[in-house]
Image 1 (cartoon, one colour):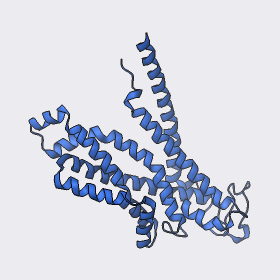
Image 2 (cartoon, helix red, strand yellow; image 1 turned 90 degrees about the vertical axis):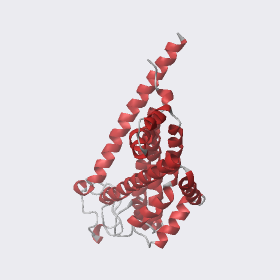
Image 3 (tube, rainbow, N blue to C red; image 1 turned 45 degrees about the vertical axis):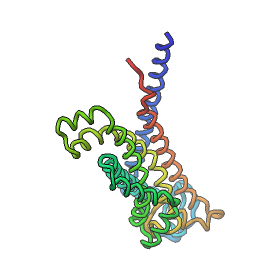
Image 4 (cartoon, helix red, strand yellow; image 1 turned 180 degrees about the horizontal axis):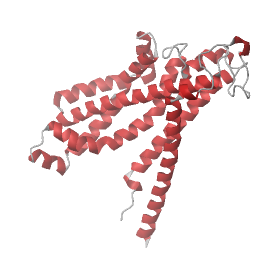
Length: 285
């Protein structure tokens, strides 16, 4: 009876997590569609200037108001979302693929390669991430692409460590030994057996990292080390309007709220994916 109650409780919890995952996936999907088709759904040209309507507060014609050049803030937030969200996703994709590839190689072959790469990873991890990224971005003279490169240079070690630890754990399993005995070479072991079994932890790490990377990209742009005017990007928009925060708060609050909502959604989705893939939430038949 106790075991049946436990199984039923796990099933209820799993169903709840699944429902939450579906809802959050739909919301994030809507957000991504808005970012991809931002140009098509903008009510105004986000770069068109009209000084006669500058600094208008939020109202029927401009639901988020206008900035100092008379540009519609809602349109700029939408087009800025395409820059911020797509840049963040590209960054996470780059570091997850590169870091996972390096980690799998280290875990599979070990030896000098493993020691060398892990010491390099330790070197990057020894510095505060954002401070190191600021130094690299300043060296590259700003720009959203350079900001992505700067963050990529210091963010890949976490994925390499996750992939390496998962690879080492899988190398001890009997199916790996059986695959070796059947004649599989190292490449076949990696692509047939190791990668499919470590993608779960890597995916969870990437999902949880999207919000962090978005905040760091916005931080670099806020410090004028990322996207440069006139490119619309949420961090850069907050930086441009920070001197007018007390008088015209909507100029800073509009992109700030967009960052808050987007980061919250991705963080919630990452937590839900982690809960959904947790073996403790699965129920035995």
